[in-house]
Amino acid sequence: MKFYMLQIGQEFLFKDQAYIKTSPLLGSHKTDGEQKMFKRADVVSLCTPTEVVESGQQGAATIDVSVLDKLLDGFINECQAGIESIDEDFSQLHSKKLHSKLQLARQHLITKINAKNL
Image 1 (cartoon, one colour):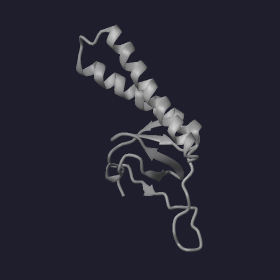
Image 2: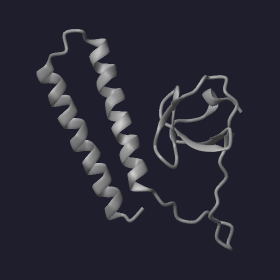
Image 3: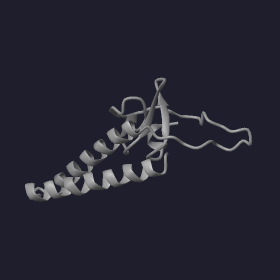
């Protein structure tokens, strides 16, 4: 399948490396969280679930918080850069407020994930 066909958040393989699609053109390496830009036409394959219980149902998902942390940092930077590129008059004060709000949302998400032991 082509990269553009993936939904954001889907796991996929590209050149035998596992990634998670984080935006229409970016994927984050599953091991180190490094961002990579992909062409829409890049050929990828979906990752298959590796944990299956005897009943045939998929096992509980686990999340590597350090990878999630890197993904969220990249997401916050993309959000902030996108907003600032739309509004040339975006002041430094507004930029700091936006960054603060995004960091707070990031921390709330990680806290909720840790509380559910995902």
